[in-house]
Length: 317
Image (cartoon, rainbow, N blue to C red):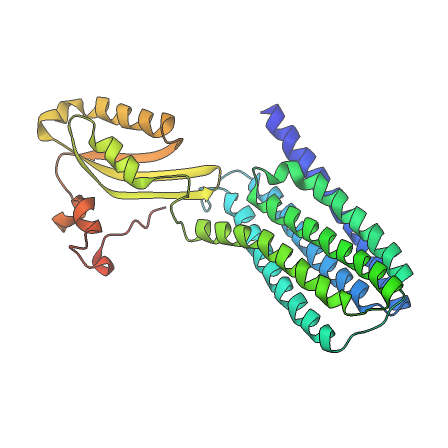
């Protein structure tokens, strides 16, 4: 428990440091870009401002996620981090689209700026962004919310590096179209990092089955247990990537009704040991309680013997 609290506080401190460093980057890039008339630097400052918002969201969600469950929020605030990750992923993709549009425009209307000053300011921004990304790297492995902020800062480091390369190219060649060309490469890098975060957070918010869980295998494993007729009304979803939930009804042969407690223990142990699902609600029954008997047979449902719009859905998550 003490180790978990220490890790939480350490990550919180790193987010606060990241916010402070990023604030300095924003002011320095905007003022530097304004003084040397560099739209690339001012644009990068704007991109960093978006990242400042993402870091605030990540910190806010990190604090909320540590709050205990309440009567109104029985799962606590675990989804706060997922919502933050979804917003971060969306903003990153939107930013990539805007940068792509500006780059295409700059290809037709190039702008000349002092390459030397661009290199110095952008290089400082690159190192600072990389430092913040490094601070968040450890927390990004297990926390989707922190991973979103991490990719924001890493993407900004690439943007700043692109500006450095542009400054070098412009200073030695005078070819101003290097700016939009490198920006398009950066757009691809940003989109590649943002898409998995956006997709994973969206799937969790839609309560899709986690990609690490094979529901067909779960059903087959339970139905192989002696005394089990079938599994139905199965639902598997994630509150957040580390908290996977499962609910299902298991139809037990009437001849094994006295063994229900033993069967339940066997199924629960299987869910934990074989599938890594520690949070589960399993209801054993000797006869189907559904109004339509077809709901008690997953095979008939998946084979399309009933219109999906009339199928039973679990709303008590």
